[in-house]
Image (cartoon, rainbow, N blue to C red; front, side, top):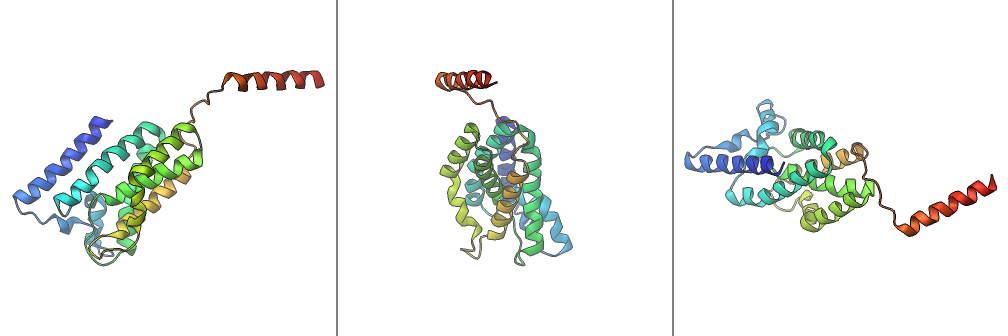
Length: 201
C-alpha cells in the first residue's frame, strides 16, 4: 500500500511540474461553489495545487495518513477515503465562498480527524496508539478549520474534517478489534472467578 500511495504522490508532483512547464491554469478545474461547471472540481480539486509550497505541505501528510488508514482499517479504508474525497468537495460546492477551491487539504484534514476520533471511539490499544501519534503529528490541523487567512480555503478543511468525523462514527466497528492480550495475573483472576461461580452452583 505504501508503494501505491507514493506513486499517487509522485503523480501529483508530475501534474504540478507539467502545470508550471506549460503554464497551464489548472485552478479553473477546482470546485467553484453553486456553479454547474464547478462540480467537476469535486473530482479534480484534490490533485491540483496552487504552488509547490502548497503541494509540499500536503505531501508527507498524505503519505502518512493514507498509509495508516489502509494499514490499520483495511475494511473501512476504501469507503472512508471515497467519502472524504468526494464529500468534502460536495460540501465546498454547496456552502463555500464563491471562489475556486483546490488542493488535497480536505483529504488530509478528513483522514486526520478520522484516525484520531476512531481511536477514541474504539478504545483498543492499536487504534488508540495510532490516534495519539496522528494527533501529535498533525493536531495543528484543528486550527485549519477556522477562517484565518482569506487565501486559504478553510471550507475545504472544515468539510474534510466533518466527513472524517462522520466516517469514524459510522465505521468504528467495521474492522474487527485485535484480541486483547491478558497477563498471567488476569488469567489467574478469571480462573478464580470461574471456580467461585461453580461452587455457588
